[in-house]
Amino acid sequence: MALILLVEDDRNITAALTRALSDAGHVVRPVGQAAEALRILTEERPDLVILDLGLPDIDGTDALRMMRSVSEVPVIVATARRSEADIITLLSAGADDYVTKPFSSGHILARIAAVLRRTRVAAETTPNTITVGELVISPRQRKASLHGEPLQLTRREFDVLTYLAERVGQVVSRRELLTEVWNQSRIGEEQTIDVHISWLRRKLGETAAAPRFLHTVRGVGVMMVDPR
Image (cartoon, rainbow, N blue to C red; front, side):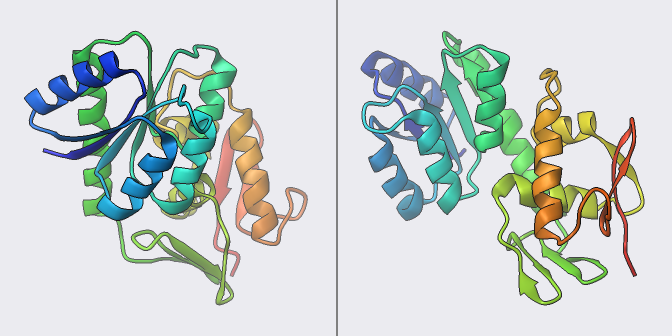
């Protein structure tokens, strides 16, 4: 059983989803506006959010970014958008998964189960700290520091950095990062990985030409190394 925040302004969809989720044993908090969803997110701490993008008060993608600024709760986006560019934007903004409308109750329940399973397994197996040279990462607190100074990282930057730090000395392909960090294997666009690696390099005080932690293996992927 999970507490699910359902952010949807269509009453018919809300009623059908609430019934299906409740029948599956979940507790549902339905709201029709993003502002109300953000309040509930901080006060009630749901286990998962289903977020419709066509909200009346705030654009759904903007609402997703706002949620990510205050919470790491898993978010499944419900959208009518089907283009690859739109999906990449949503995943880069912090969505854990997405479903395209129309969808069946069985489909959304399967997605919810998969996201919750990944979240719980990750929480159980996450180490307290990861140290690579002067870089210290605390996955459970979602904090990272370099030379004792905190790093200001976005959610995806933190996830990528942690994934690579857990595999020091191993080459990780862009496809693996898309699959394991973005939880997407069907998106054929890997440019977003290069963008996040570039942002991370800047915050780690290095460049592609003079790397310290993040070394590109041409044609393969990227490898975290201990610079000591």
